[in-house]
Image (cartoon, rainbow, N blue to C red):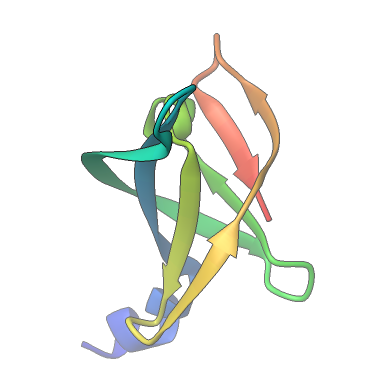
Length: 88
């Protein structure tokens, strides 16, 4: 339990949502949501490493930290072939 308490702050839950734009109806929530995990690489800068397949089709990204804070996130880099993505 102590190991979990000490290290869990470095784990992030990635929440994804798919939105689309219809020329007549505007932004449409497709109702598809996904989740994945990531690791906090730099807490000061808010840098998180996750898998590319987690964020590949997402229109909206949020990061859940410590089961308390949900923050918006953006993709700042990825390598599809290596299945790696970096968020902030």
